[in-house]
Length: 441
Image 1: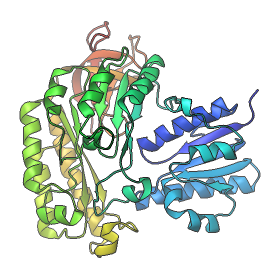
Image 2 (image 1 turned 180 degrees about the horizontal axis):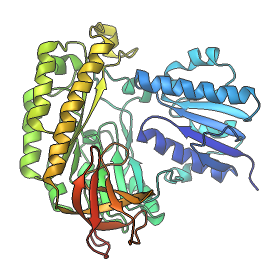
Image 3 (image 1 turned 60 degrees about the horizontal axis):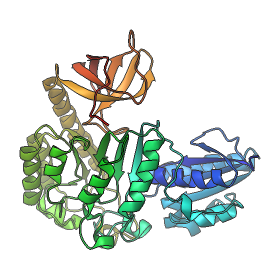
Image 4 (image 1 turned 180 degrees about the vertical axis):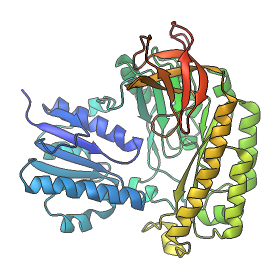
């Protein structure tokens, strides 16, 4: 018999999603009927897992807390808890400003949350989760925290120092995910390049990938957030030779100007950045390289911004996102720099770069017309089945639209598709074989 209905609303990054999924499993084990991201305020208990990284994320978190607080005051939900990054950063202020919230928790408090729920936190369930993604893909968080000291980033102050999970624990978790039907593992961390150094004394990303690649049922493995400095030796060669590892490099370079990179406290120069990107392009031809940039960081004048623009035009990234600089409390940038670029100019610069990138993306998509490629199907949408190539990650990258008529395709299938064209944001394709594509199990 269920004790209560518990709804966890997850905001922010995929790391938060993993935290929510593990807490959902703990709550279910204690007898709760669990839901995820239900907007309706009809649950006995609602837990909001917040993001507090940049201004936009903080505003979304506060708006969500206020919306559910009003429902709590109307008696539509029994209890309201808040956890995560925003609560970790501003717990005392939030507690005084929004007293209707029953309890506030930080980022590493699952045991305290379970005690408040009248349940028990069980260590043996650490590797178990209730998957909230479509089911055929899942995120695998391999570490917590970060040891970098980037001037703009609040994560080390929120999440603490870098702590790697053990390879054995991650292999157990991934085996359970595969048994539940997961075919694509998306490996996430604040810095994958650092994985294992704290626990094993050396970089251990490649040994981890070897263990994960051996798991039956896992077909694709995708890597997110590889820091440019100390990029793991032989990773390019390993991706090239291992068909399970998607040819997808997520390398957040943030800027190309040496002046700005120094003020960002990044430990790589523009020259080193270019050298690494050129090495990837040469040794892993055809791979998709994704990056993120920041406009309006202290030190970015017109000269530095022009350099960044020309870099985007020159390198022609396959995937690119742009953030505007957010002057975050308790960061090095907040304590040592003035926020000298107006929000309007930051936004204008970001928009201009994205306009450049849109044209690049359209040109790159035009070049792959006629290509045959494997596609994993994520969902049905109207007259289309919607999927992704090995070059595209869910939620952040482009998708492939495949006509539904006359086909028997289901979410989770990996099929062979011929690219027939593109729209402004997506690819168009048609199935070229009834046989499921991809690599052998």
